[in-house]
Image 1 (tube, rainbow, N blue to C red):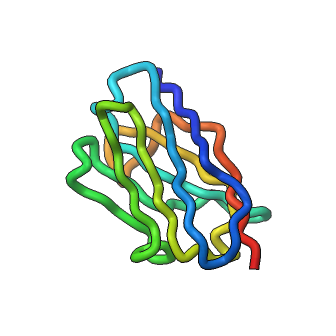
Image 2: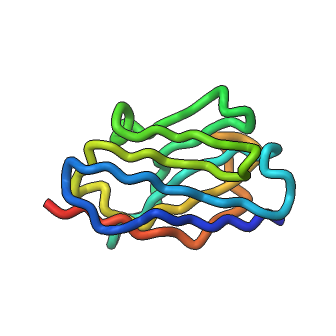
Image 3: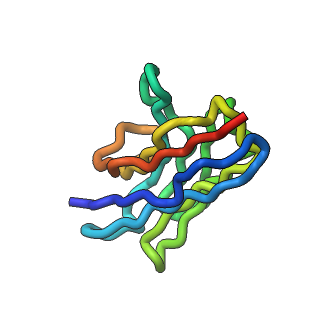
Length: 119
């Protein structure tokens, strides 16, 4: 089992920046690819970004490419999502997830952290 706890979500103005963190515990963190997903009110959950177990490969949704950066620190069992140039449409609950492959099905999920971007 892997337990994931997200933090860092809050209210921010459009154009601002925010960094989300996801702390992992349980099975060896560095074995897993990690991803960030989000779910806006009334919408389905969508992929945001993912990173390979080594951090050598990253993947982004087109909607966040160039604005968001995913990274990980295996020594700290933590994955991050740096979000810049935030837009109101980025408002959502952001979830951290762990799986065997960055673009495959995720096996473990956190409970999410709310990001609200005001216009």
